[in-house]
Length: 313
Image (cartoon, rainbow, N blue to C red):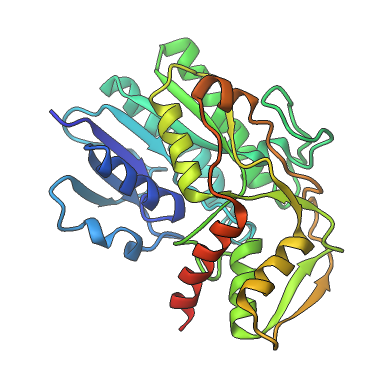
């Protein structure tokens, strides 16, 4: 019998790549998405596959899946600032009610559940790099609080179900991830830089560009998810690329790849509570999962550029 896995947020950037991977691993995949930020084009290549089925459903409402279920990957959530600023209530609900519904499903089905948490649980960190033991520096009522606190609550709820009900759970803290299938209008740095540079528009850098991020290519992230899902480790674990770079430097790398003479960098004010540094401590992922990112940023940026070029032409 094939292992059966439910993937929420299945038509999104990460969810769709996870559908690909789990089908390649020989699993029967159930994709679920309410499509508020997802795109069916990301998974339509699976529609004729007998090992794939899709449910158009909001996991903030009761979730029913017939038959046995081995695994749940909870990746449903708006994930970029422009999304969760436009949809603050939905963001809070999918992290709280959605997580509660899925943990209940995991309990009933005796399924292992992995939740997608985020580096945003660390807020604007006062330590760098950020280890899993760091409790974070988060403004719960700031504009980013709806996402940060939804994910922090999601972790707390998951650990409560693990400790009180014995549900088999995993928690991944995802750092900035990029690659094909990111939305052109996603609002995050790399989609914005690529789309602006390809169109010959002004490339917008917020603040002076000295704030840092650490960009992990999507294939590496998916490998980390799979290794964690198959491991016996139940505490939160960072998955990301510790190669830290300033936002200004990555904007210049993108412009060098695109090579559009009409594109010029401009600077705008830094959004409120925007983290000044972001870099994962991946010691646990290396030692416990034998995971290490393999795709260098220049290679990942080239692959991402080719995707955006097709989307925009």
